Length: 227
Image (spheres, helix red, strand yellow):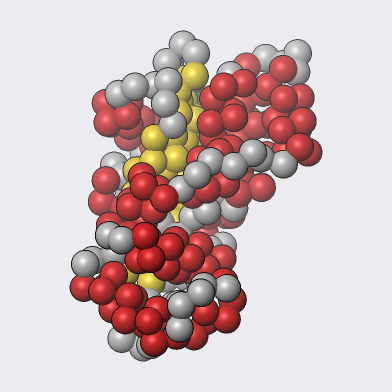
C-alpha cells in the first residue's frame, strides 16, 4: 500500500467510525482536506476495495472498512494519543482509592463503559468476573437486529467460559491486544481491546468492529499501567 492509499484508508476508517455511514470520495475530500482530486480519491477507494481493505454495501455508493482494513489501521497506521486530563484524573482516583478490589473494579468498569459506549469485562484471575455496559454496547447501531443482540448476549451469559480462551490467545499480559472480528473469541461481530494486570487479572473492552480504536487502545494502555 502506498502512502496516498494509506492516508485515504486512515480517513475513510476514522470518518466511518465517527458517522457509521459509508464513506464516499466527495465526503472525504470535503471533510478531511485531502489534497487530491475527488476523481483520484475515488480511484484509490476502488483499489483499496479490490485489495480487501474496504467493502461496498449494495445500498450505498460509499465504502465501509473490512476486518482486514481495521487490522491494517490498528497495526500500521494508528498512533496512540494522550487521553484527556479529566479522564486520567478520574481513572487515577478510582484505581488508587482505598476500596476493596471488587468495589474498585466495578466502579472502574462502569466508568470506562460510560465514556466509551462499550461493555467492560474484568477478570480478577480467580473466576471472579464482573461485566457492565451491555446496554451501552447494544445502543450502537450495529445491534439493532434482535438476533444479533441475542448472539452477543450469550457471550456475557457464559463469559466465564471465554476468559481462559482470552488468556490463551493474548499470551503476553503486559501488552495491550486488539482482537477484531473473526480473531475475537468472544464474537466475530465485535472487537476487543484487552490488557492484563497483576495476579493474572484481565481488563477487556468489548465494542462493535466500528469501535474507536485510537481512544480505546490509549485508554486501556493507561489503565493497564496504573494497575
